[in-house]
Amino acid sequence: MPQVALSRKAQSDLQRLYNFLVPFDTDTASQAIDTILDAFENLHMPAIGSPIAEKVGMRKLVIDFGDSGYTALYRYSKRTNVIRVLAIKHQKEDDYR
Image 1: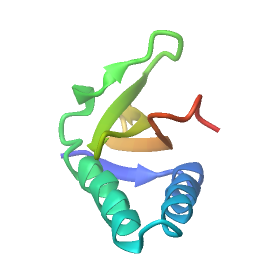
Image 2: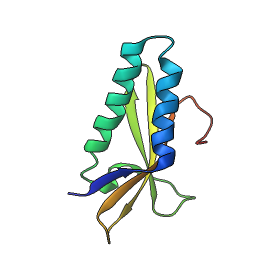
Image 3: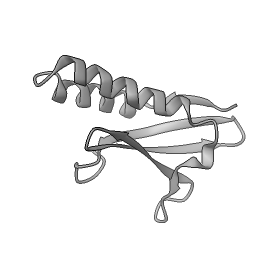
Image 4: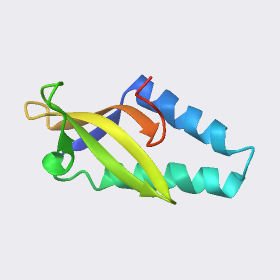
């Protein structure tokens, strides 16, 4: 089974998403982060996410949460057997920062 690693950017994104939700509801903020992290644990099949045509080798994982959810960009390396999560965003955000 591949190992999942979060880039510094992805870790920063998790903090940003949490910080956005916390003023509204601490429990919801924690649940959102838990849902995202749980989704990464389910990446045992690296090809589960949708390929991104303009970015060779990258995939997008859709993570449902509430009325919308989150998306995560990731790349799988067969050589190292590591799935590297590159960025995470809310589905209503324009693009990855």
